[in-house]
Image 1 (cartoon, rainbow, N blue to C red):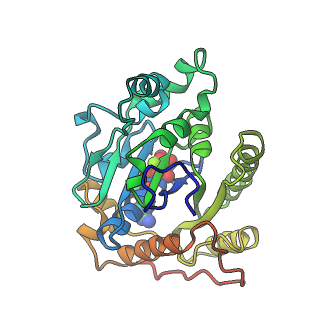
Image 2: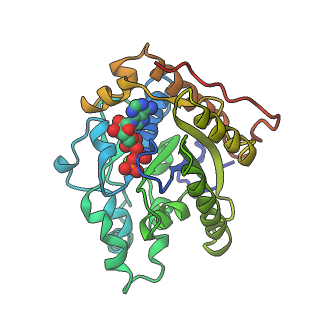
Length: 296
Ligand SMILES: Nc1ncnc2c1ncn2[C@@H]1O[C@H](COP(=O)(O)OP(=O)(O)OP(=O)(O)O)[C@@H](O)[C@H]1O
Ligand SMILES: [Mg+2]
């Protein structure tokens, strides 16, 4: 079952899941933070949330100030760190910070992340494989059950690092007409990463409709998503909930800020669906109707 090097025989390797969509504002960061919070706080998992977006929002919404952290995810793109640690025989460690939630650690991002792939490209043999090399060499990663990665709204060297470093993708899709174009582009990119960048096991575990509203257009887009992703489409669509913004402005997860709100119920359902959709299990093949929560 374990498909990555692990230094503890008793524990399966963590699932490595990236939340990707080059469309900005599709709820990537919100979903990573919320699903990570539910899986650790309410489901007892050990979760590492990794921010690979130079905007650095993931730490903030989880209550970890990126400016107060000495190390950040840029270290995962610098092979010198790996080489020195390996040569010293030291533990190759990840730059994690504990969050307020027990069982949930965070690796924050800084602006430097945007420049890292370009700076390194002259000297490195395979710059877009750097994240995978770091994760594979890490001795701390196997102590987690889930690695959830937040990615930037663009497809450059940074996102390619992410796509090469994980086995699973979650794609949040805002229910707007143009969002479908982005999906087609993303599928082409996934195919390229599988075939040309030696990550054949990369799979889409879940497609999550976001910003659902009871409009005809939203339902049309949802129908198109069902056609295109019959197995992958999540059973819950995430509506528009003002409590989500409020919780984030306080650096709290929705489960701490408003655990009884409909937003918390929808996000918990999505986290638990992701738990079930592990590689090796076939997503439900029967045509299903996405369960769409009532929106306020
Ligand atoms: N379901 C929701 N209801 C209300 N507001 C939401 C919801 N999901 C996300 N938001 C808000 O929408 C904004 C964009 O969400 P988020 O930052 O999660 O998207 P993103 O895909 O990570 O954006 P980017 O591509 O810029 O990284 C944020 O202000 C967030 O608080
Ligand atoms: Mg984001």
